[in-house]
Image (cartoon, rainbow, N blue to C red; front, side, top):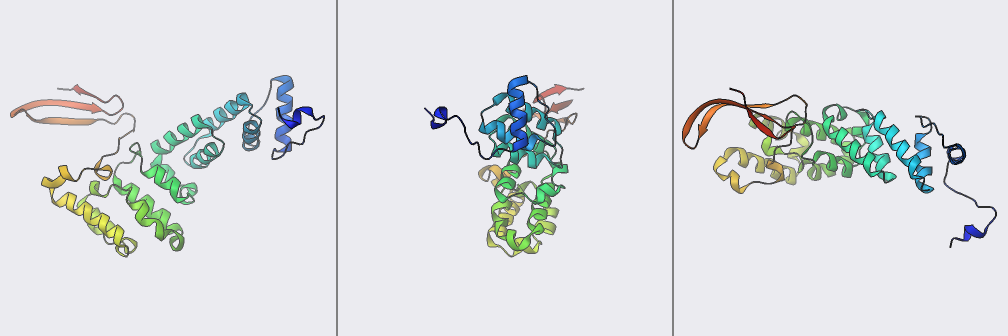
Length: 250
């Protein structure tokens, strides 16, 4: 039994006054208006008071507000207040729209742990691993004096073996920050070995050699002619990454 149950007056701390008024009105009227001006105070208050209906309403509102410029902030907000469904949706949105998200101010302000969570995902939607490397270097160089120490930790989640040889040698290998760190140089050497020694690739498989899953709607992969069990084939097939199915085209 809580001590407050025997008191005629209870002091509730850490709840915004306006949010408390709205929640009390809701308890009497079953009506509440959630909007941009109040959602960031309503959701924490609803979580503290265990008003799950209000939590759900706030989370649904924030889902509709998701944009490449704010999805990381909403993701962090959902994580702080244990809104698992909103966190999942924000994660998916971030992964699918990464090419726009990486250009946002929120991306440059990410703590290193959240950056690693994002770029380590197989679901990250990028046209090439070059975009991931460029995003990482933009993040590091935004505050290079503080962040250069994190470069080895972050770079190991960039799939360097999947880069083109030209980009790996000419851009990654020649970057001064990469060249100045032994762990980073080791990652570049690992990628070079993967590209230069195709016969050894079966022994070098790991998270950095695994292609990410494309998620752009409408994009498919075509396979034109080839060999099957030693016989030449003249068919054309397409693979849809959304359905994970191959279909005969011609």
